[in-house]
Amino acid sequence: MVEVGPHARGAGQVDVDAASAGRVEIFLQVILPAILPGLFLILRLNLFAAWMIVLIAELVGVGSGLGQVVMVARNTFNSQLAFFTMTVIGLTGFALDTGLREVQRRLLYWVPQGKGTLLR
Image (cartoon, rainbow, N blue to C red; front, side, top):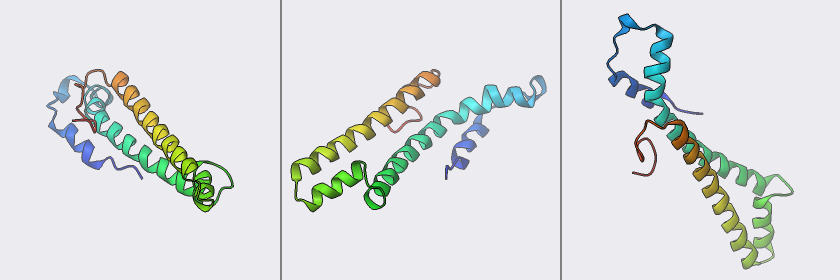
């Protein structure tokens, strides 16, 4: 489900003297650092999609969870519970994205702030 093709093309823009380095060394020191910002961007987008799928699955097939609480609030016309649950869902998604962004910032220390992220 993860698309890495377009981001792997960015590695082709790096000029490498292949005679002085082996394939593994080129991959670890040139290609991998060139494609990691794009991979983290895809990971963050897929995290959003996975979070939505979990909530939909809870709405449809599971007897407990945040999705089920939203359904109960809707069926009982309890707007306070519905808004509270939606706030919890939003804050959880925001916390997951912020956490992944912090992992990205720490692992990709050579990437300038805002490059390879959704925050430009």
